[in-house]
Image 1 (cartoon, one colour):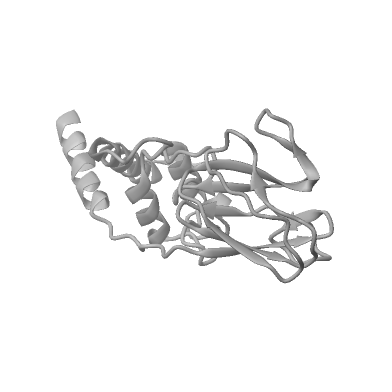
Image 2 (cartoon, helix red, strand yellow):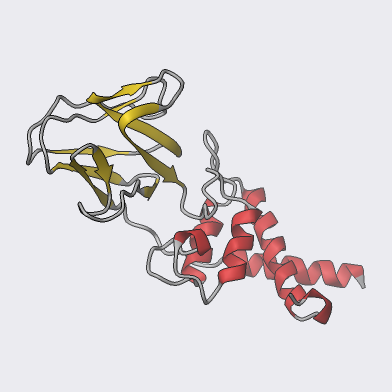
Length: 212
């Protein structure tokens, strides 16, 4: 009996490992520089630090002059501009997962411990499939997607394709990035672990004792 159940789970695993995923195109995210703030929202709305995917580009636009942007010392991504006038722009592509802290040198300062004070902001860079923003893609992210499958609308609920819904395309993205963490690449064994988790979920759905 156990052998038959294991065979069924592994067969389900093969099917899920073969799920086709949506290939995300790199996005450009706008951040506005105005007053003493950096924000992905327009002026007058709450200040918002963006969350982006690895490979995305941030496009800063100076809506007021006399500011620069530069990463704190020791950052996993390093960038720095001159102090620029209103109307200026600057683009930077982020290729490392993690939270990057940056600031405006005339109106902020680097605290020397990975943080900044004054006019400062953050860019959170995550792998597709990372719902809880812990900079790795694992079974906890699958659990979030599972709980919100068919009902979720945000990244934190499993919408990794950014189309406003949680569906198989999001599972495909999670599957292809499963096991990723800083300085690692997905391993084939990670896909099998995810497939086993999916198969167990499907089996559990059919059991009354597993119902929430």
